[in-house]
Length: 322
Image 1: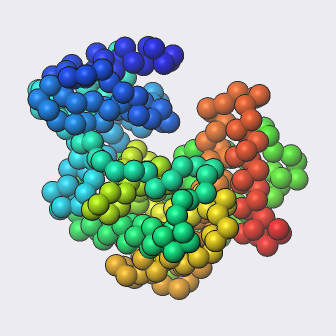
Image 2: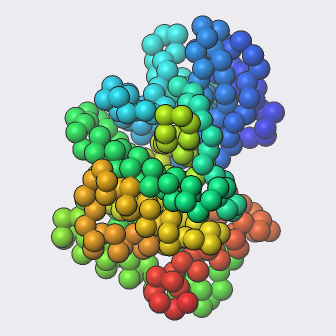
């Protein structure tokens, strides 16, 4: 859908919430088109037009239920805002629309760009992110989820099965034959590790699954996770791996990893054997992204090779073939 069509659809959708005082501002256009809006009643919201064919209606409703439960616990999150009729979901022009509370703050960083600040400030940021993720995991463990709660499973099948959630990464057309073989070796190695983690009773439950820099806000109250679109069930170390997945541009990546793990352990147990596997989950994120881009780019798009190259680099590091 062209940008002008998305904007017109958003202008129609916001009427379900009573309309807006000012023209909507496109804040993000990744999976969902997200618009900043101030409703006529003064509430500040993020209006989301959900990507067609990504999350089903049951999954979207479950995300909103989760956010309601977390908000009720006092965990700062983008809590859902109901329509004038009291519904949490609206359908406009064939697109699902939802609104959540707008959260103030600055993104802690952006993809492909080194973090700002001194090394000590950066470490403090990642220590705080570790604590934030640990608190989220602890909060979700206490929730009584409804029987119709449906969210993705970032488990062995969801990450590495025959039909991974984000696509068959080993079929990215930008991969060479040797690179494809390398990714398949990494896939099998990780499958074996995940099977062992499952047997050993590793920490498994609800995860954010997308704690990238642009999904973490910083303000005077600290750090806040946003964008729960990919939230689902998985190994808790997955969240730590994703949080480190953009650090390939950082000169002190090892110090940031240590700070993240330290912060997590300040709030929640993290056994040493699980900590040692965090780099594997960083690789798994790179593999997933290598598949994710295939359905979102044409054959000439340079991003195909970018994501393929990152996956190859992380796989080599994990397998010790760097």
